[in-house]
Image 1: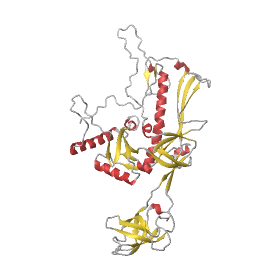
Image 2: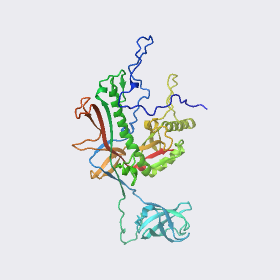
Image 3: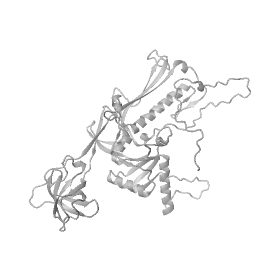
Length: 459
């Protein structure tokens, strides 16, 4: 069976030693040999750009916060529907008492009032009735049907109730009671993220022989300079991946005992308040139609971005290419140029909503989420744009991106990305330690607004 040969393997644990190693130096100094080795001055970047931070830069924003707790409220539904109800009357009855068993009525405060008109539909599909509400009790309400034939479903059937209006007679009093606006209050708290790089003063005096470069453009001949920049890049990656993967510590957990509280990352928010697609990637328009139907029931955001791993990206390309072959839709502009490369990829498509596709390096990187056997995440659908929420810290409505990072900051202290040097080497003079220590710190949390508009694709 054909496949990729595993020659050499994939190095998942690169060396991040903080001291000079024997392997860092050329030891072949036999000048009597006529076969002296030729050495390259520049370090070969065999893994390319190794940084995985890019997701939040594309879809989010960073805003300061002065509190240990970040709270916001999100609007509830404007209309009310109960989907687990039952009638006490038999078929053909003119009146009935409907019992609401939805979890939202646990407090027995159902949002149905006398005089409202309702549509009652059998969940099994046997028919529906229109009725007017004549009385309301704790968790139940009485109705009188408009149809002369009476109730069309049996007493044991599970029905859905939807309010569509009201009707009152001449000279009657107005509506009794009122419905309060439903809001959901969410909160998150920042965590402190730290890292450090250290090198002794003696080792700093040793100049390496290889020119090194890092992903942020830094270069030089001092090997400790490369390690410091790699520590910084790795820390910047963790600033993003922590916001994606973090979970709040549960009560009585070991993390609580270790004085760690955790925070709600994006994946945790979508898993608990959003939409999940499991069992493989959607590979057909019919499966995407299921996702679109789900989005219709949520916020119906017009533009969405699919951040996907390589396999999921190819699945979408193949799905769209199949439409081109079967329906004759345009598949690129070729102009019959023999020197033109054939582009087999798609950047997006429209079907009810606009979907833009983007590769997410974090899901492909072999040292991160790439190739993870269990708990695999293949992609995430993120709504584009911003939403309006009530910020309880500001005390007013504010427009915020659906994903944004809040970092601790005030006029006296900015903890977005702190860096400071301690020790007595490398220009530092803060202690008698014969070393240079580069410290990194950030305190931040991510806010996932409208998680019901996100979709997480897993295996």
